[in-house]
Amino acid sequence: MKDYITVIGGGLAGCEATYQIAKRGIKVKLYEMKPQKFSEAHENKNFAEIVCSNSFKSNLHTNACGLLKEELRLLDSLLIKTADEVSVPAGQALAVDREKFAEKVTQKIESLGNVEIIRQEVGENSNENNLISLKELVRDGIVIIATGPLTSENLSKEIIEITGNEGLHFYDAAAPIIEKNSINMNIAFWGDRYSQERGLEENLEDWKKRIKDNKENNYINLPMDKEEYEKFWQELVNAEIVELHQFEKREIFEGCMPIEVMAKRGIDTLRYGPLKPVGFTDIRTGKRPYALVQLRQDNTEGNLWNMVGFQTNLKFGEQKRVFSLIPGLENAEFVKYGVMHRNTYINSPDLLDETYNLKSNNNIFFAGQITGVEGYVESISSGLISALNAVEIFKQENKKLNDKNDKDKTNFKKIIFPEKTMIGALAKYISTTNKNFQPMNANFGILPELGEKIKDKKLKYQKLADRALECLKNQIFKYKRL
Image (cartoon, rainbow, N blue to C red):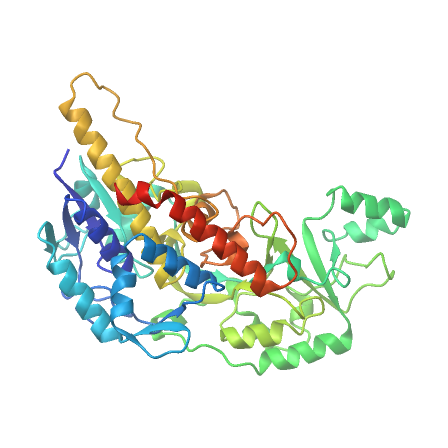
């Protein structure tokens, strides 16, 4: 057993993990390939480089990311503490001076006496002798892989070997996700393709009973007439899009086209594609819709639903505006907007547990966006959880090595955060079986429901946040003494 823990990647998750381990008196070897090698999106030699935005989103507890930040403050997060120190005026949001943030995080990591920083790429490539193999690092040692959404090709090859051919994704083409209770079910109807038409042969009351009994409700369907569809199409083709990096543009391929690009091929293209109404005669009217949008269940609880075929490069505000034109989604709450970008992430539900530990190897953890958490603060939270659990394995394995009577070297105490907390709910989401898994950010839809129905959204979110913080504070002593 090595006398240190290895962290690969000096981004937000890797730096948080390094700090949490080092503050507990354990040596850390931190590998970072910059400045020897930069990804296509990075240019700053410092750690914790922020690329896309300077905002860590809202500080309000009625915002999911605001709640997550407050939980991380309670848990002594180095990255959130540093963000607070270099914040710039941004109203209710936590925004930072990006250069100062990266500089200060780097200084703090470099000042930790038990951290060795190794500026070297990790990965296996026979043509580059200066690389160190991941296999070598995990041999008799604990490793946290926190290499982000632009993990190098050399390391990706080794991750595929460890996780299997289906374990790694290189492109994130995700559709928006909506809270079920915000869908207008007076407009929407349940059913699979052709199942509604079969229902026409039945008594309407019998059909309603079948739906109530959950026998044919795999999809929620949103019908559109000609006028509604053409208004939606017109707004869609004229909506503002996000400009991709040059290296991302070549990733878009015919089999996974943005819905706005598809729409620009002709006014009826969507009606022969993802909005095809064939097989969806509405039993309530006896008519087939002009076009139809389908929603597919996204989580086991059934409170989050995915817009089928709506992967998109529209700006987030434009998604809210345009997609709310779809009948039934006029008051939709989007917990995640659609994206299409370069993003290396593993199939976490099959591979990881709630501690971000690889199920097939206790010595390997993943952290950051490579796990399927999406966003700066979410990445930090995964780095913290993986670090706490890596420390537990380290301590327990060393204890067993010193105790000749303890022969069990497989089981260890896991530190699992309560599902009622945002940090715990996010960890559970990425580790729960989901055949349609896609990266997820912090949102109130992944928290367990309250025991009461609350119509006022702000009040509901406040109660969820209060419950989360109370739950965490009741157990905070356990995490701080580790």
